[in-house]
Image 1 (cartoon, rainbow, N blue to C red):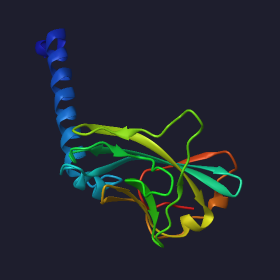
Image 2 (tube, one colour):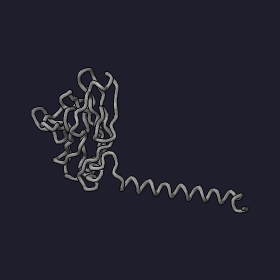
Image 3 (spheres, one colour):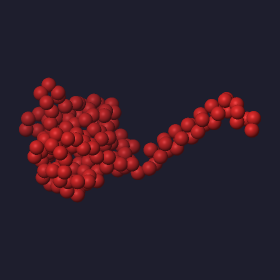
Amino acid sequence: MKVLKRPGIWVLLVTLACGLGLAFYQHYRQHAGGPFADAAAAAAKPGAIEIRKIELERDSGYGILSVTFSYDNTTGADVETAAPQNADAETRLVTVAGHKPDLFFLPGNFPPVLKAGEQSTVTLDYWVERAHLQGALHLEVKGERALVKDAKPFALDTVENHEKVSFTTPEWQS
């Protein structure tokens, strides 16, 4: 029992336990089906989208949907997240019915550009109507798609006005 009274042994045991815990955590993150597992699996290939965070803020009868995602831009050209007038954006939110909710940004805060040859993590805000939340939502970047919301309807009225709710999976609960 003399061995357990030595502080050096305790430091060694705690360090070993922390190392094993960190190794387990890293293994779990890489192999477990996480919240956006399909997006994470797709992110293993270049050019894929990985959804990081989803937030919805109710603004009266509408919502502001914030989508934070990572994108590895291997296209060789910058990707615009906002489109010039009368053009389709290279990055857009799309409903199951094919509607494309408008990008929401305040004057002076311009949407980011996904630089060529870089992996970027950006947040885009979209102005969504109740009808947009009645089916699946996908984020598209240069033809790649990631599921943001599944096909189950979501009732915007379950969110208090000017309150934000976060979603950790594409299966939103009203």
